[in-house]
Image (tube, helix red, strand yellow):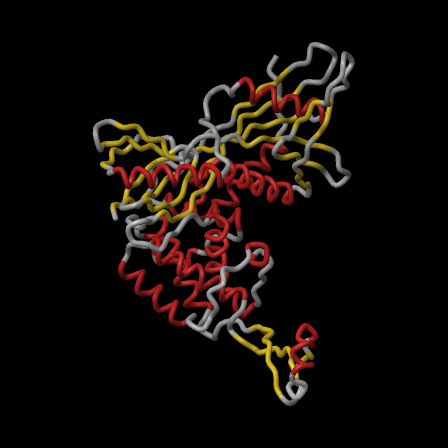
Length: 423
C-alpha cells in the first residue's frame, strides 16, 4: 500500500492508475458523496496522461484505502503542526463521544504516526487497560428444551410442545461475555485490521481478536451502541468504545478481497466543525449560566399574493434562564479574512433582527491565535444597532492540556464583552 497524505482543498497529488483502480476511485466517489450528502465528489480527479491522474480532496477528512492507495486526508483548518492527528481525534471524539485521554496513546510524542495508527494505538491501550479485570458480563437469552422447565416457558413453540409433550421448550438466561459492548469491540477490531498496514499493530489486533474469539460476529446496532454506559470498573474501555462508535457511524465499504478494497471512514468536515462549535458554545453557555439552542424561526408576513413564511436557522442561540435571547452565532467553515462574505452577514443580521438580539457572531476555524473583529451596524429605520463579530477559533489550542478550556473561554468572553462604539 502507498501511504499518501492529502490536505482538504490543498495541493493535488499525481498518481498512476490502471483502468481497474480508476473504477474503484469512481465507485468510492459515488459512495461517499451519497453517504455524506456532499455537494460534489470528495475526490476530484483529472487525467493528465494515459495513466497519470491529478487527485485532490475536497470537503472531507479521514482515512480511506482505494485499491493500492492508502489515503490520509488532513482537514484544511489545521496548519503545519506535527500533532494535527491528535487535534483532529480530539475534535472527533468530543463530537461523537468523549475527549481523548492522552494516557491511552504512546503516539503523542511520535510525529510519524498516521491518524489511523493513532486510533489503533488508542484502541489497543484502552482495551488492554479495560480488560485487565475481565470483560463486562451480561445475560443472553437462549432457546432450549428438556424434561424439566428451566427459565421461562417459550410460548412461541407451543406447536412443538404439543407434538412432543414430554419435552418442554423454554427460554433461559446465561451470564456471558457476549454483550453489545464486546460485539462492538470485536467488530471494531476487525475493521481496524482491514485498515492498518502496520505489522506490529496487526499482530496486536489479532491478539485482541483471539481474546474475543467466543463473541458473536453480529454487527451491533448504532442506535443501541449509543445507549451503552460503562460501569466504574470498566471506564478504561471508554476510548475503545469511542473509536468503535466513530467507526460504526462512519464505516465505509469493505469487500474482503485483497485486490478489491474500498474501506475506511471519512467525515464531512463542514458538519464536524458545526457540531464542534455548537459543543464549545454549549460549554461556554453553561459556564455563564446560560443555555444554547438551535431552532428554526419563521418570520415575515405575506402582504402581496400568497406564499410561505421566511425562515432562519441560526447555528447557535444563547438564552438566559427566562428564555430571553442574548446572542446568536453561526459556524462558518471558511477561510478567515478581514471581511466576511456578504451573504453570511445578511444571514446573521436576519437572525438578530427576527430574534431581537443585538449581538451576532460568525465563528471561523483558524490554526493560530488571532484577534476578533467587531462592527457596529446602525439601523436607519428606527431600530437598535447590532454588533457583528468575526470570531476566529484557534483549533490548534487543542494541542495543549487546557486547550479546550481556552476555546470555551474565548466564546464566553465574546458573549459577555461590551464593545464601545467610536464616534
